[in-house]
Length: 563
Image 1 (cartoon, rainbow, N blue to C red):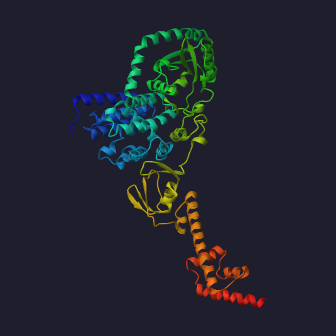
Image 2: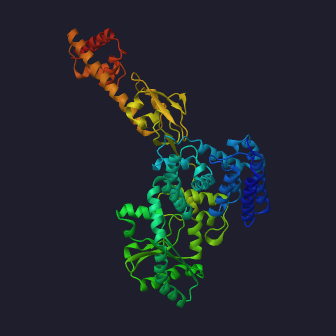
Image 3: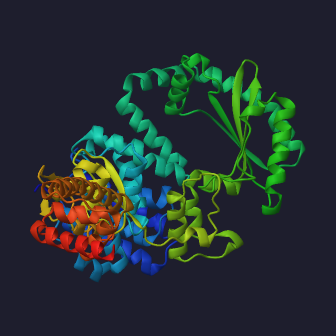
């Protein structure tokens, strides 16, 4: 293996120094020491290793760590794990050695990452909600999700490193990682990922929109300067310390609007977004200050009432707070976002970083509280009705669901404790009825085998197989129990019809006629609660017909004596 060149070593050292200077601002000396120790281990083990593009592996892991710290607000254990995320896969370092050097938590984070990365996604449909649930359910420590986001973003920025299937990588980024990033409020990361996905999927359209934005840049600057001039004057008159930023909306966002509205670039409804940030707003005055700015803007420009979005009264699940309105500037429409500097910090970096040092009431949080809140956001399906500081709602236990993958890549949800037989009936009644076992992750297992989360299951069937009464001991889902009981009942009715036919044919042959009283006594004699049960026993040869004839004759004689 060819060692790194002198130039590459300098680039690695520069990247490492940037990371250390960053983490030293918030970490203790002991925590910084662990980061340095992880770096030294990487230098020792990765020397000469390269990404698919030829880029040094060391630059990749340092970039993932820098993203996790600077852009996501992660802390020491996640940064150490980011540096080590490939170490057990690419080198001879073991998990036991990781535990000894960096502690059990780092080892568990890396084990969790390896478990998720080992999931064969080549045949899984990543576009379903069930897949997202499977992904999250496999993760015990939510910091694994943060590492995956950082790793995905790094690959988006270095697409030559993606190995081996770029199409699948961008599908996973689009349908799994970007929605998670959005829920966490990491909007800058989301924008970068969306642009990478669009460049991969629609490069021609991306370049065309980019070119039109560049060509109209001078005109845009002039328009926005004129638009903002009276707003600046109004804000200053109110004594507000403010910052104004403006931008053309992201290319993927514009492209989505073009498709949704079926219009060309020139006719997109609102190409521009202005952000007004109030720098001197006190916590208790934040809402009033935002509405004050709203009043100034809408007194100057006509608003569209249907485009008002009030996320300061009811923040998004991610913690995002902002007041959005869209106003008319001549023939153009401009989106105006109004927020305080505190709100802007959360909007820029996401609440993940905000929560890492602060919660409501300015109480410092434990790592467990922070992780529970992050998991709560990802698992909560109602974007609008979530309080990130509601510990009762955020503190969730282990899921009572498991997610199983079919050979076609479809994800099925089942209760915890489900067996192969449960899964077979979930796929189809006939598949369940004819099930003789399954290949679970490539290995044959019996029908009573209890499945685990993320198992890939291929049911084996035989046309001669049919449900048995003891199958009820091997299933836990009501669906499977119901199907088995129904089959057994149907079989019992078939046997009963056969037994009834045999019984009445024999009576005819014997030239015997019986009444209801004799039939009832006959059922009691053979310990049957119903005629169906008696007929069933006849059909399956549990009753000797010669003996039954003698019993009937005895009952008839007894009946005649009574008369």
